Each structure stands twice: as structure tokens, then as C-alpha cells.
Length: 502
Ligand SMILES: Nc1ncnc2c1ncn2[C@@H]1O[C@H](COP(=O)(O)OP(=O)(O)OP(=O)(O)O)[C@@H](O)[C@H]1O
Ligand SMILES: [Mg+2]
Image (cartoon, rainbow, N blue to C red; front, side):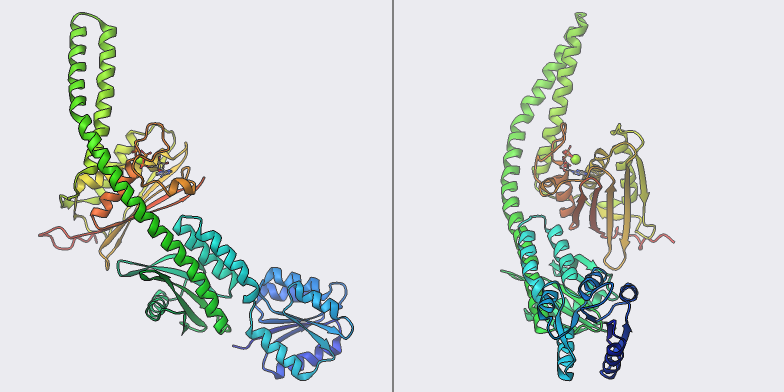
């Protein structure tokens, strides 16, 4: 593809000469005397370079450059000026021009500066900003957000069309964050990511159609944890500089991943200890509670007999409260129980229906809409633990409903991936969402922001999904809502042919 050059000069003679020379150098040239026409041209198409005369009326070269940069931020601009206005030219460079050219043109200078402008993009200026951005990000905690921000910053500060951050999880490369346009081919990006992880250094590959794919491994102590991959448009040839820049970015992403691993390790150790203690305490409470309940019932019966209605009422309240306590205690003890699943054929869609109607019955908020979008290609049954999954999904659906204001919406979606044999269940609400501090703690035992909450729901849900070898991810935007995605591998029900709806 020919590189496109925009030339703006109010001197028709110079414009003509430049157009001829640049065309002879193999460029696709758009030459105009009119600044507004130049702005309009950049609205409509991407240029690789602009040559602007400094002194023009009514819009001078600097103003025009600023206008062009608003429309195409990284367009390299060469400002042309006559002898004697070098200061202004230097000023132009400080305000974002790539370089300046003095008139009359010396042939080699023109050629040299143009090729330098095309080759060297503005990495250096962006670099410090990137480093600062990256460090701030890496310390902000929630990994998904950090990776999103790294991908976004990569696209914004390079000329990449897209950026994808892959993370290695149980031998698979999962796209964790992306920015820019969707890739034409995921396998190409994945292959590049793998190769860079094998080599341990940033690596360049030819792009799918044109351009290039550059991948940089995310290195943590234990080895590569994934890779940051960019794809560049056709005209951009990645240089050594680009590779260095990507290495910088990928190190930021790696820091984010490492921090998260570390935090999870610490947290799960502490949680396990806390869990054991809670289970012991709950155990100790169980018997006295049972006794208390019996006494309260007894009292209630006696008072009823003697005709003391008020007293009987009070006794009833006591036993009600004790019942509630006993329920909490039994939840805690089940949580601490050694994990084992009772797998039996389960119709998951029916189970979800059950959870929805049960949860609905417990919610008093008005005007809530619930949508169910089930994938008809999913097997009718699978070997799962219905009891455990009911607990998990019920809590997730309840959390969603509890977050809704009147008029809110909850959507339960399933999607069957036949090749991986997994069913993805997404529970999405348009509720309150969560701030990062809450999001970081939702799996902590007893963490709750609700007056009546026990703070066990999410911990239980995750442990149930983990036991099924599945995955659970939470994405939340404060003030907009929350999406909980669970991916469950299906083991086929024995003695049945593949169930497939037709
Ligand atoms: N869909 C959601 N929308 C907003 N906040 C949520 C959502 N899901 C979970 N949370 C937050 O996470 C916290 C922990 O949730 P979790 O289900 O573990 O406990 P809980 O709902 O507070 O109590 P319970 O043990 O009764 O479920 C909640 O208190 C809430 O702040
Ligand atoms: Mg809950």
C-alpha cells in the first residue's frame, strides 16, 4: 500500500514542486492550499505524514497541526519554514511537530527527514507517560482492571490496531483483556503469544493480512504467565524500539498478575485458617442452640396452656431467632466440611428456574424484570451436584436481585460450548455494582455490606464451582451493575446418548 502524505502550503509554486517530488518518491500525495480542506481530508482517511507550511493565512501551520492532531493524534508532522524563523520552528517541534524543514529544500534533507519521520514514531515521548501509567496501575489491585488499562494504554500510545493480554491458566491461554478493534484471527494472536512465551523475549510475526503481530511475554518468577500481543496496521514496521516498549508494558501487566497471585495466596491461607476456626466455633454452638430451641418451645407450650398469650408470643419469637441462628451455624459447618460432590444427572436449566423462582419469592423490590436466555443446544442433563449448585446459583441470583432498585433487570443466560463441553452461566444485574474495595473482598468469609447478610454466599458459590472444576468470574461497574460468569464443565450423564435439542 502506498503511504499517504498531506502537503499544505499557500504558495502554489512550492505546492506544485513538492507534489511532484513526493510523487516521484513513491507517495500518494494530497496537496492543498486550504487548511480546512486538509482537516476534512484527515477526517476521511488516515495519513502517514503531513508537511505543513508555517506561515499561512488565515490558519498558520501550528494551528493546522493541532487541528490535525485532534483528528489523528499520532500523525507525524514536518513544519516547513523559510530561513530566519528557526525559533518558531523549534517551538513547532515542542508543540508536537516531528521536525522542521527549511526552505528552499535541499533534496537530501527532504528525503532524510521524511524517511526518519515515517520510521521513528513517537515512542520516546510516550514512554515516560507509559511508565508512570503502568506503575500506578500495577498498584491499584484489581487485576482485571489493571489488564484492561494496560491494553487500552498500549493501543492509545502505540499505533497498534488492537492489543490483547493473554493469561496462562491451567495450560490454556485465555484472553483476559483487550482494546482496539476485534482481531480477524484469534489463533494467530495466540500462536504469537505462545512463541513469545517460549522464547522469553518480545517477538515479531507477520500479521494475518498485512502488518505485524508483536508479542511480549509476561514474566513472573515462575516463568511466563501469559503474553501481551499487539497487531499493527500494514504500514507500520515494528522496530527495536517498539519491542522495548512492549516489554515495558508487559512488565507492568506481569506485576499486576504477580501481585494478584501473591494476594490470593495470602488470602486463601488466612481464609482457610479463619474457616477452620469458624467451623469449630459453629460446632460448639450447635448443641447449646438445639437445647435453647427445645426450652423455648417448651416455654411457649406452657404459656399457651396457662393462657398467657403475650408470654407465648415472646417465647415464639425466641425460638424463631434461635432457628435463624441454627440455620447460619449449619451453613458455616457445611462450608467447613471436607469437599466432596454427590454427582447425579441434573437438568441445569430446570435447576436455574428453581433458583430464580425461589429467589424471586424472597425479594420485595417492585417492578423487577427477570430474563432467562437458555442455550437450546446445551445437553439436557449432566453429572453435577444439584444440592451444591442450587446453593451457589441461588446466592448469585439473590445477590443480583438484592442489588436492584425498582425497575431493575436481572438476566440469566446460558451458553453451551460443544468443543470444550462447558456451559457458561451468566447472571447479570443492572443493580448497584460495587466499588473496587468491595469487589476485592466479595469472596472473603463473612464479608458483607448488607445489614442482614452473613457474607458467606460468594465464598460458598466459588467453592462449589471450584469443586466442579469450573471457573467463576465477577465483573462489576459501580452504579451500572454486576456480571457473574460461571463456567461449568459437563460430564455427560451415564447411559444416555448425547442429549441434543434439535
Ligand atoms: N450482584 C451484586 N451486586 C452488588 N454487590 C454484590 C453483588 N454480589 C455480591 N455483592 C457484594 O458482595 C458482598 C458479599 O456477597 P455474599 O453473597 O458473599 O454475602 P451477602 O450477600 O452479603 O450475604 P449472604 O451470606 O446472605 O449471601 C455483598 O454484601 C455485596 O456487597
Ligand atoms: Mg449473598
